[in-house]
Amino acid sequence: MSNLVIPAERAARHGGPDFFKGGAKFAETFEIWGGLSSKDTVLDIGCGPGRMAIGIGERFNWENDLIGFDVIKIDADICRNVISSQHPNFKFVHVNAWNGHYNPAGTIQPYEVEFPALDNSIDFAFATSVFTHMYKREAGHYLKECYRVLKAGGRLFSTWFSITDATSQSKHARLKFSHALHDGSFTDFPDRPEEVIGFKYEDITDLFQSSGFKSVTFFQGDWSKTADRSTVRHGQDVFICTK
Ligand SMILES: C[S@@+](CC[C@H](N)C(=O)[O-])C[C@H]1O[C@@H](n2cnc3c(N)ncnc32)[C@H](O)[C@@H]1O
Image 1 (cartoon, rainbow, N blue to C red):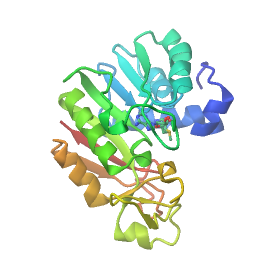
Image 2: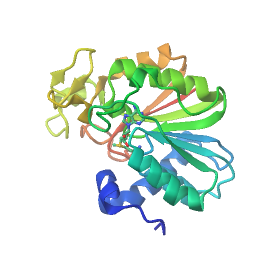
Image 3: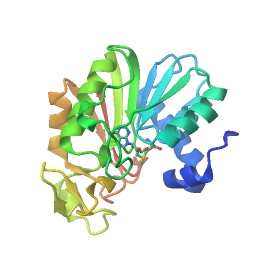
């Protein structure tokens, strides 16, 4: 368990009592599914109040840089104040991009965001529960930015709600994605779509391909209750792709 103190109100939005446990479990998955190692330079896209960064800092004897960014200023500030004091090579940036759910006053269009990282500088990028709040245009742009900043052979670990015939027919699925949006994505909340957005599986793989990624590996999550329970590790679906 971490000795870092994240304000309870912010942690409550990211697992509450399981905030640290969730980060630790993802850090383990980054290593076993995504090959993350302490020699990697890492980009944490949509870092929130640092759940994943803390998990990574505690799992590995970290030697390299981690850059995190988020559209919520208070979360980027918390990460900088709390996490960077213990891990000085972890840097956190506020990017004031619009998101109807998380940052409705944002002044930058999400499909115009430039990631705070240089071309070909990142070994491992991840976005956990971030593409699940984005429309297709911005998701496509973020994937192109991922491609730009990753080194050749670098990996992107991302989570999505990936919709198939099986998930749509599942009686026990946690989300139904019954409302189609203007761009071919789906939500359960047409009056506040950015709260949860899913895409058809083929649309996600098309987005990866048109962003330049050739190799994509899929691990189904538990949200739809259609995954093999013996291998599932997380609620959302995981796509890992390599530049
Ligand atoms: C469900 S939270 C997940 C936070 C963190 N990745 C985690 O797993 O603990 C979604 C995060 O995505 C951020 N977000 C939404 N739109 C974004 C964007 N365009 N760029 C970066 N972050 C964004 C939100 O502010 C929020 O912190």
